[in-house]
Length: 129
Image: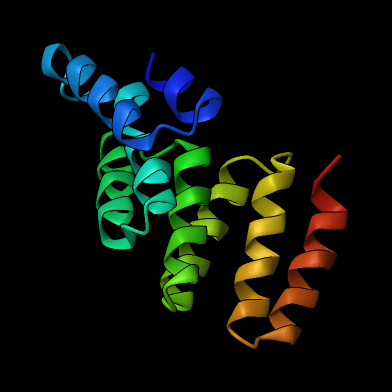
């Protein structure tokens, strides 16, 4: 129901309530923790989004979607160096994760590192399908 409210109705408060109910019975379930980040971000709660996504990465350090999302979120608040480390981890764990390459390049562009963005694009061409 949390995803229905989030994606289907853009009812962010309702989505958070539904995920909160689920988390009461399974507090460390990354499937319920992960969406707290994107929902908080949609509401402008950047710090809450980062905290939620950090928790997911702590519980599941090989979760490439969470690494990528946390990296992109940190970049949006100007924490580009931290973002690059996270997105690099995501593409290292899964070189075929095209979204991860896009985020890694975007993070570098946002930081003003065009040479780094070009390097990531070259690396992507050699790694992604």
